[in-house]
Length: 257
Image (cartoon, rainbow, N blue to C red; front, top):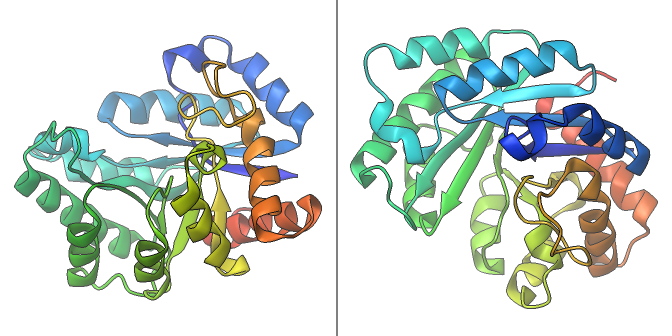
């Protein structure tokens, strides 16, 4: 059985047919999912579905797109959410330099504040880093996160960038992008990750993997395609890859059976 360590089940394309989505996932062998909530409204929606659905856990954080909202006691509100049942991580948090929907200095400030919160609450951290690797590493280092439970979700970098993350004791998670035919550099990076620091995710409703890339929206059940791809890249059996990634997710997020 597999664990989708990062999906967005509160997305309109999935939430309206959540029962069907969960049934598809279970039929495909994905028996647990972590839905990631990225804004105050999303925190509320995610908490609602997690409380009603046994296979679900949640992570919560303020996405860098929303970093300008980090004011007026919002960090205290996030802390209250993170203390709730079935919340297993802070995230996704980090830096987004492709769109710059929030000023970069505000992104770095919000990132640092949330990392401090993760340390206070003893929670793993799910990092979003897009075109911002150097600054992401700098903020994490400044906040003393080396050897903390940190995962760079939906990693799309090079082998050298992967090594920078791994050298700090952190994890890398791969989504459907690794299955794309033009993702040669990313596939090379995926080969070098130690087996005990490898995670997989769908990031659904985004990034549907090959060979069903044209289907929208992506769903947690499609995680099996990414797992098969990674098993082939790394020269191991699917069952071995699945077992390792599941054990890693259980350890990283402290999941119960």
